[in-house]
Image (cartoon, rainbow, N blue to C red):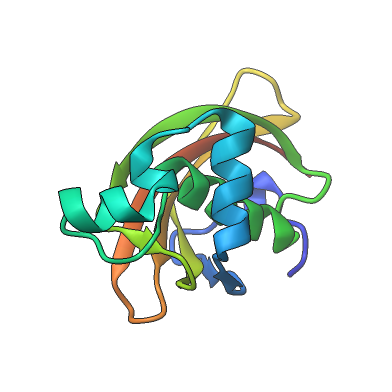
Length: 147
């Protein structure tokens, strides 16, 4: 995908990322790296005996991180993304080991700023698993360069 400037985001603009399969290695590395050492993510016996889950879960923060990686990896922000300014998110369903996710991105809002070289773009990002179930949605607000 080509890099997008502020002006390129039109009312009907949307895109879909490539896919990413979440492996057990991904989950174990992530929970260890960020310190999410909870039985929910590390102990399969606990998971099967104490919860209604039967497979290893990916933390919502991992799903969000990989979704953002898919968006950034699309190239749409290459050289034009100036800052991530925050946004709301909703975790809608579990992501398990060996699930494959992709992201659909649509323009939600955009506005000019007092500085002529940039604008603020908010997108509505929906993360789906391989079954078409939406597992996460979020609205990232970004500062984007103008032409």
